[in-house]
Length: 233
Image 1: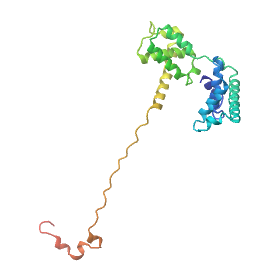
Image 2 (image 1 turned 90 degrees about the horizontal axis):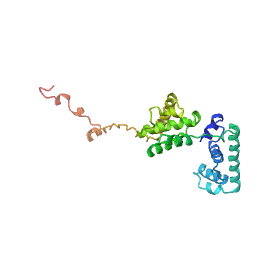
Image 3 (image 1 turned 90 degrees about the vertical axis):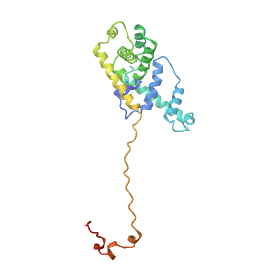
Image 4 (image 1 turned 180 degrees about the vertical axis):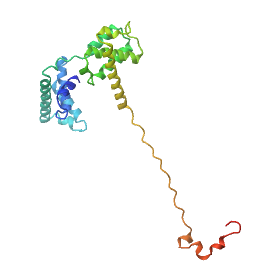
C-alpha cells in the first residue's frame, strides 16, 4: 500500500492502471521484505481477481499467450515503480516495529494491543504513512487505542514525550485519524430508508343517476317554485 501511495504521488491515476500497479507493488513488496513469492502465483491470482466477473478467466490465464502478456504488464509496472521512486521504494519504513516497541514499553494490556494492531492495519490503507514518520504513527495509535479501551498508558500524563512526539504533533495526527474514522463510518453506514411520499386519495366521481345520464334535468319538467317550501326560502 505504501508503494502504491508513493507511486501515485508522482504519477497520474488516469494514465497508469491501478490494478497493474497494485499487483506490481505486491510483487515488489515481497522482495523488499524478504518474503519472496513466485511471479507465476501473483500473475494467476491477480488476473483471476481482476476478471472475477468472467467465469472463463481462471482457464484463460493458464493459456500461454494470455499468461505471458499479463506477466509482461506486471514486470513493466515493477520497472515503472522503481524508476519513479529512484529505487527508494525498497527502503520502506512501516510502523509495525515502532508499535511493537511502544506496546512493550508501556506494558499494554492484551485488549489494548489488539485494538492497536487493528488500527495500524487500517492506517496503512491511507496516506498517513506518507505524511508522518513511523514512530509518530505508532505513538498516535497507542494513544487512540487507549482512548477507545479507556485504559491508562504509561506512568506519566504526557507519556508520548518519551517517544519523541510533541503534544502538538500528537494532536494533529489524532485529529486526522478521527476524521478518517468518521469518513469510514459514514461510508459503511446503511443508506437511509427511502422517503415515503403521501399519496392523497382522490375520491371517485359520483355516478349520476340513470335519468341524468340520459340527459334528464330535474328543472326541465317542473318549475323552480314547486320545490320551495314556506319558511325555508
